[in-house]
Image (tube, rainbow, N blue to C red):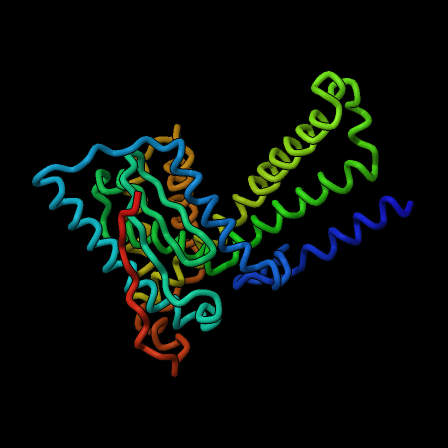
Length: 299
């Protein structure tokens, strides 16, 4: 029994409970490991670029268009960032500013990390998105950050890794696969088995969180957009007009299609406050000399 209780105690130590801005209970890493969370999620975000196809290098007029899109992302991002820092004062304790990165990848998409980085794929430029839709895409990623979804994902990865490395030996799960481990080379085979189980388990657990996280980010996005001056009905109408053109084959565009439906559903509920009222409700007395958000193309 002690062989089981000790691992369970260690699992308790490496995780903690928190509450998202929308009141949902979350499993997150304890404070000493949250710096690691930012690094891990940044690495995980960049890892997504490995399988994404590069966009061709721009030439002449296309370079001018690319620069204009970059500046547009910057302008929308700054507008949203100011509202985000005013709505959520604790962001000052986590990172100094949001950073918006436009990466030259041919497919449309967006991603983010716990450290405040929002990554936009060049493929979005080809979709000719309205400002309201592009702002929604940025706001949804920002709200994944604000809500601590990346910290939650890292905690899930840590939890599964600890379970694989400690509970497997404690419960002798590896013994069930002794034959395959021996065939692969004794200890090396067992280690590979544990690592594979850890990776697959982590991905599966994080995938189970994803629908809830996206729905939460959508709700928060409308509030953030509202505070930054966009009316919810405007955002919903623009998303709805875009929805028929979005492919269901790629995960990101399929997710955006679902967001369009969910936002339309939210518009059927209690009305959001007007943009002017939302700005009045934001936290006052915070400094306005924020470092400006930046747009870069490091990849």
